[in-house]
Image (cartoon, rainbow, N blue to C red):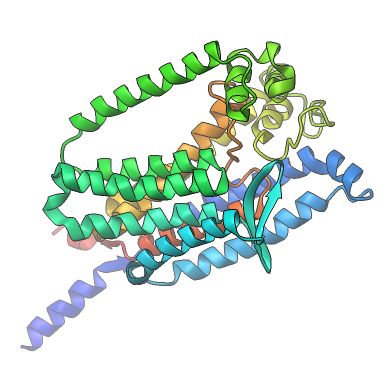
Length: 393
């Protein structure tokens, strides 16, 4: 009896708690890099807009980022399984908040779009929608069990993803967020579904259909006043549509081209001096390329790659299916947002207003991104590894 108790105690000692400090370090490094580039990019515009206060954007972002890091660390100390009972409520609340943007006076318009909600603080409910999908779809997948392989189950999961994405598009006029939410849902279903051939074929077909529609719209609808059609035209022929959205893209390409391999040097961008509108937001990658060159751009992409690698590691070693799917959803969100932002900047797709995670200016974005990082760190705390002594036996 005493021997068996001793063996159990020994087995507990041979396992160690894990906390992914590498992920936390990667996130902090990206935030610090983003703050440096934000100050370099926004100081001139802030000086003009805010009575000579060149640190206005930097100071706001730095304060929110510091608070967001502390917030993420606090979340990481919680048990992520506590999200399961409230996941459905979060899903419904995000829909209600997005509806409030459109149908109540609390909705706030900025930069030509009504996407913000003012209830004491101003934020974008569509950011909550991303987290709601990430934590709720895994709950449905787990409850389905083996039934997830049926067409009916896949259709239901796609419905929940499309409902949230469609709400982001219709209620907050945010197509880019709707696409990201849809992408997150598809990635989760892809991971949970045992057969991948269906997704490869349908994904290729869907991409072909979307590409054909966009090309057709851009070629035939040359006189439309719809701003999304104008964006497609600006994407296909930016030099001929400088007044319809092509100007920002062309200036971003000039910035990238003028940077060369090592760039002009930090703070020496010419395009940020009012040439690229709101360069500190979704076009900040072009300033990175201009000031730091291809070298700086590759370095930034490597940092994102390492961040995604750590998320992949956590998802792969998560103690249960829920933790693995949640971190996979976070992985999909970060990856999609980085890819879409860079594709917009280098004109591989029409402009969508997607920010570069941890780098672009935006308090709501950094706060909810860090909430996701906190959840991922919480999952990492549940990982258990056997030590070398037990492994060698």
